[in-house]
Length: 173
Image 1 (tube, rainbow, N blue to C red):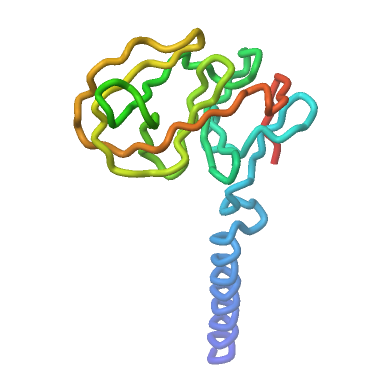
Image 2 (image 1 turned 30 degrees about the horizontal axis):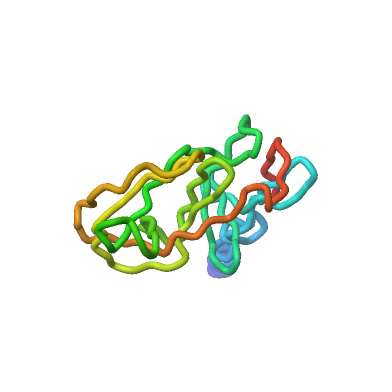
């Protein structure tokens, strides 16, 4: 009886040991790789890297040392969702000086407007005094801003064509 109890205890300990050994492997990504932030890469038609998946239609990509997120769109000829407008904020009352865009997430949020992708390059608490809307065909007039404090970053842009993407895009592991 004692030897059967001893054998059962050894089997139980072996099973528990295997279970506990598997936990760190799963936490570190294990064979499924879930902890790896670059599990799914989004590639264009020729296999060129578009970015790494954040959600099913948002990718993150490093642009000039800044990690930028943007939405991909399967039917847009550039493959990147075109919002057609973005607010540019200024610390002056006449929309002069440095332009800023909102920056509320871990990544810099990219917004495509026509041929350009706008994104913030830093993060700071500001009280904008004026704003204007940037559109593909130019800028709307200057308007007073709410003067409510928010998080903004210096507005930077890159030409979408410089990426050289060709649709369609696909996700691969």
